[in-house]
Length: 219
Length: 215
Image (cartoon, rainbow over all chains, first blue to last red; front, side, top):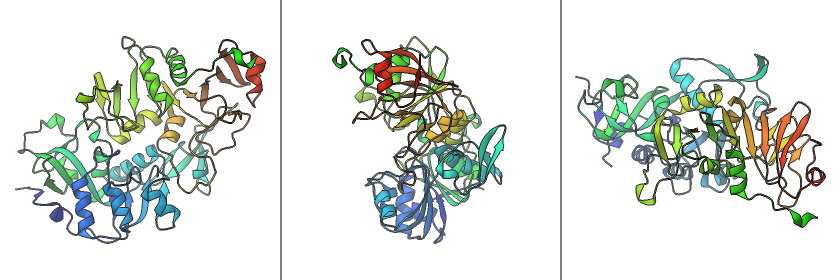
C-alpha cells in the first residue's frame, strides 16, 4: 500500500542535507508552507540555496531562516531594500540572484519538464543580460536561461490523499505545482487529509506521482 | 498662465486610462496607480483582469468582513474573483503574460523614451538590492503596453525622454503614456499628443517634456 503520510514536519524533512537547494513557494504568505519552513529551521540544514519569489518581509519565516545564517544564496524575483534580506545582502552576508518572476517560474517549470534550456525575450534588453548569451530569434533578442531544479521542494496544499494527490485553494496554488515537479524530494503539508478517491480525479491539481511525503497540518 | 490648469490626480489618471479599455480585453494592471484603473471600469463592461499570482478575472476588494486570506492580487491585497474567473499556477500565469495572451498591460514607470523604452525597476544600473518582480515579463509579452505616471518628477524634471537615463525594463515596448497632464502615443516618429488637460497649451506641455512632441 502506498502511504506517503508522515507524522510530523520533522519526519517530513528527514535527510535534507547541508547545501541543499530548497524550492519554497508562496506569494506573500499565501501558498507558503510555513509549518515545513519552521521544521526546516528546527532541522538545522545549513548552507542552503533558497528559491523563493521574494526575500520576505521582516518577521516572516523566510526572513528568520535568512537571519539565522542558514542560507548561502537566495534566488528570487525581488528583495525589499528595507528588509532582513536586503540588509544581509548589503552587508555581504547573503548572495542574491534576482530573476524576473516569469523567468523564475519558467526555469522551475523547465526543470520539472526535462527542458535543458530555453530562450526568452524577457530581460534580453536589460543589465541582467550583461555577459550572457543573447541570440536574435524571430527578429528579437532573446536571453538563454537554464532550468532551476531543487533538491527539495516544500509544498503547501489544501487537501491531500495518501498517494500525495493535491489540491490548492484560490491563489494558494502559485508556485506550488511547478515546484512539486522540479525537486528530487517533494514534501507537502496539507490543511486537510482526505481518503484516497475523495478528490475527484478531474480536480487533482498536482498528481501524487510528484509528491514523496505528506504531513497533515490542520489549520 | 501656469495657474490656469489643474493636473489630474491619481484617480483622474486611472479614470482617464480606464475610459479607453474596451469590453472583452484581458488586462494586467501593475502595482500602484495602474491597480486603481479597475475601480473606474464599470462592472457591466466585462474586462478580464489578470493578476500575475495566478488570477484570471480579478474583482474588486471584498468587504472587510468577507476577506478570504487565500485570495490576493499581485500587491498581496485581498480581492474577489468575478463570476467566470479562474486560477492558474505561476508558470501558466506568466505564460499568459509572456505568451502574448494579454490585450493590454498597464504599468507605472520612472521614465519612458520616445522609442517606447521603459524604465521602472531601478534608479541606478547596478543597484545591489534589486526589485524586478514581474515587470520585465509583463513588458515584453503584452499586445500593448501603456504606462501611467506623473509627467514630471516632484522636482519638476521631465520623465518623458529621448533616451531613458535609468536602467531599462524593456526596449521599444510602450505604446501609450497617460500622465497627469496629457495622453501621448509612442509612434515611429516619437511622442504624439492625443489630448492635453484643459488650460494647458501644447507649448507648455513641451516645456515639461525632454523629448520633442508631435501634434
